[in-house]
Length: 70
Image (tube, rainbow, N blue to C red; front, side, top):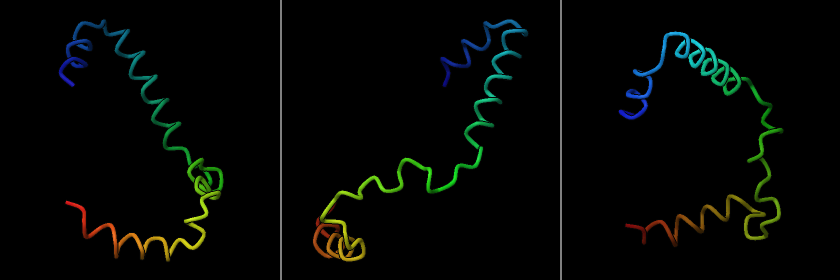
């Protein structure tokens, strides 16, 4: 973070204003609502046979694997 602040300190006011405008644009894009069905994470494990019954998969994980962590 300090490196970023040093770089910002060397910029002109015009450069900073341009950067801020672009940062605001990026933020607006990130905050735009994306329908859940269009999210790339949805269905990413659809082809995993071991996760067909997700509740059973989580129950097994909790019973057998989580207690042994740490």
